[in-house]
Image (tube, rainbow, N blue to C red; front, side, top):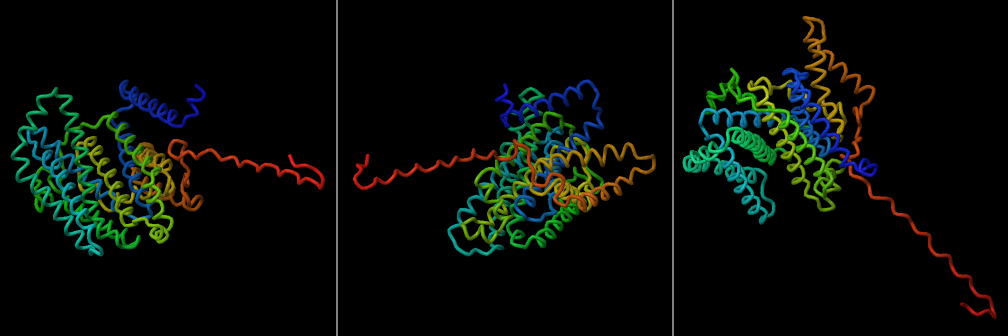
Length: 423
């Protein structure tokens, strides 16, 4: 038993299982009411968004302010799938899932084709990939949905209602995250050519563009069910603690295993010295866009979880000021530290929406937006490397191999003197 406890994997799984059981028990007996459940679910969602940003900025060194744009894309896309599904309309599910698959296939084909040529212009790469993605979704809308939409709806409804709901919810989360990843890839092709500061400004502009489009989904875009600036209502409230827990754990495990792989080391090398990484043969452009896409997928997945917890979406939730929250969390927790991001993400929501909102004197609730900048300012003055620096708990850091014991060379044999016989 003692050896098992020394195993970091076993200890982490045991601790995570105990947390899951404890929270589920507190929810079941009513100790955690709907408000505190929302705080926990929100904390998990914002932590997933922040882990994605930490992969982009903390581990890859690309300063980004676009996480909330992809968070919004995942939220609205997954919400639209389930909103239409409960109203007997499978079109959004079919278009997003099959359109994403076709778009990915066409984009992979375009990438393989362009690799045959040397020195293809960045705008040409973007144009070819953009047309491939548009073609995939066009085929899904024009041909795939009319052909199999009703069959998909009939097949899923033939299952028990609870199972059918869980499958649709899973597909909605996957569809929203995949759509966020596709858009981030297209956006990253031209924008990642910029330097870090200019890249940050471009991603902030992307977030603002997404917010403006969401304000006009019922006028500029053909999505009247999203209701534009009035906010989207009628989203099924399907987020539960098991969905939150296992989605969060999937993000943590994927990121942890990625960072400990050869691909993860290549991603880290770009942060440490991009020019040196290029000199040893690492394709730094590919590593940048890979980190950016994976971080955006995490944000899109978190958006789906958050949308089906609140059952309501409004464009102001993804505006200019809220978009800084993931950046504050990773700086507060420590750039390049998954442990710091996880601790700070939950603490941030617990402090901002829990303690300060509930326990400040009546009429002073908005003063929480003064308190937390002061806390952050003190943190930066007293510990600029963040709460955890680059420290990781044992499970999240790669165990070092045991030190190799250097064997002492054999003692030299004495030289025989004259007249002696060497043995």
